[in-house]
Length: 206
Image 1 (cartoon, helix red, strand yellow):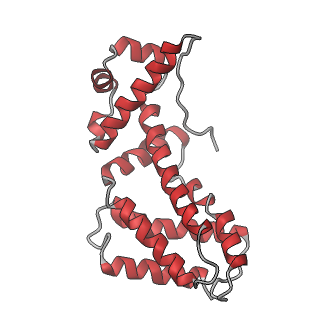
Image 2 (cartoon, helix red, strand yellow):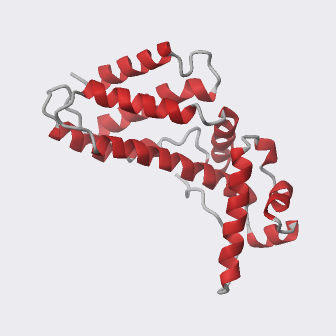
Image 3 (spheres, helix red, strand yellow):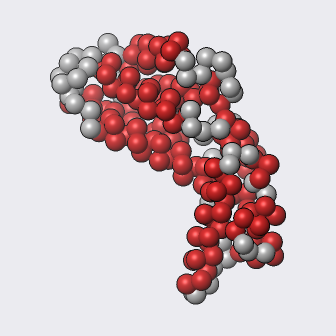
């Protein structure tokens, strides 16, 4: 696997260099929120940030990486939110309650994200790293889930090792997100929620 996406920024020791990067990232994030990948260009980023195209080309070795990196940071925050739900889960509650909470959380997140942005991210990242998809996000949930399973007192969690759980969580996230990303009519519906909950329970529960 090649190196992960990073921002290459030509820095110096002056504080204004850090401020320049902060301004560029803020401008790029504003463009991402507009949810139109056609805006993710050097020229438009220069106009949005207030810096010249020459400054961007001088400071950033890859403008494309700025957008990819910011989208990736957003995805990590979503996983962090899910991880917190698992950590705080009451060990006296059955697995069904945890699964429903996680499904509803991801549904809420995906309904706010324009699928074009995710398709852009996956396409550009695949071109740069030679990967079809990035499954690394769900791996951060393995540890908290194993702890929750050990602490649970309802006997509703299936005994899983870390390898099997990692694969199940990757598959489950795909089951949750893919309909949203490819604008499937079922996305976010009652039927989609039921299918997501039922299949997660089959894979994770007794």
